[in-house]
Image 1 (cartoon, rainbow, N blue to C red):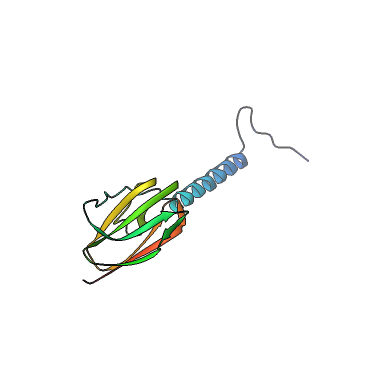
Image 2: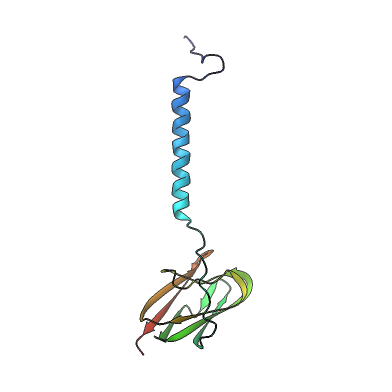
Length: 134
């Protein structure tokens, strides 16, 4: 059998094709992973001046209660009770808290509808706010 060798200091066409294929696979994997992990969205300031009619506890990787109802024009307050960091991120990004182990975040709901939310680093933590007409 005759062995084909690359020229000294160079590569064969087969070697170049293989390298290009690996590079293409790497780029494809990188792009697909970045599509799965969009990152933490920018926080939306808390409506601290609004009086909350409902309080949701954020503790032990759950929202308690996970489902609440308020009237349009009312606010929900999330109280974070450590030790782990959590946040509140609505699906439509209308309300987004900072990641925090303790503290609170308030959002005033002005329009009727269902507002689903989750924790950006614990996606199994899910909740929903039902906003009904006054």
